[in-house]
Length: 199
Image (cartoon, rainbow, N blue to C red; front, side):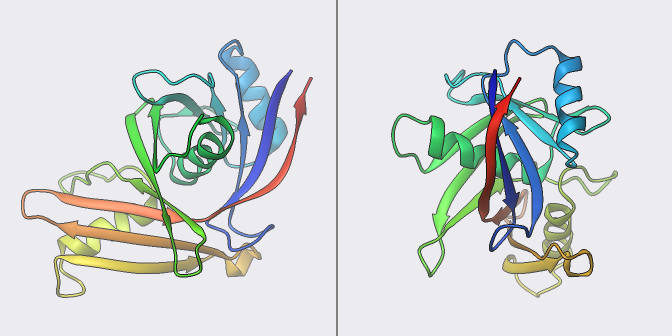
């Protein structure tokens, strides 16, 4: 039996934001079973933490949609890092590294003015010569900073979306154009909704 939990990511409270299911200790689950569990959860993505033990100073994680495995997705990365920090890490940490198919992705934890956790995921550096990959809001931040939309080489903005489908979502975007490289981070809160066991 594997433990799972459900979260709302980029949410201010339960039943808002983007839904995510996270399954722990999934190393022995075959790919087909991970796909079936994802279909059963019926969310856009479900993540599988392969072990509670770190590997290469990070945690091996797989991300599935109901159709297939994907190398990276934004809100699953933040939600899974939340689980690792609060339920798996043996000591308080400010950064959690996820070993994803796309490569290692660090997630840092910060506090807002109210003292609430805000999770920040370092986006893969955007490439503008071809179609961008990764989370659409990270791409938006990269585009805005590359084209100096705000007239500066740094930006900190909020993005709100999802009101029309009754899933209000709040994302924080940070970007900096350092000349040779653009650094983009996408952040938000994670709210626990449910937990249970798979049989």
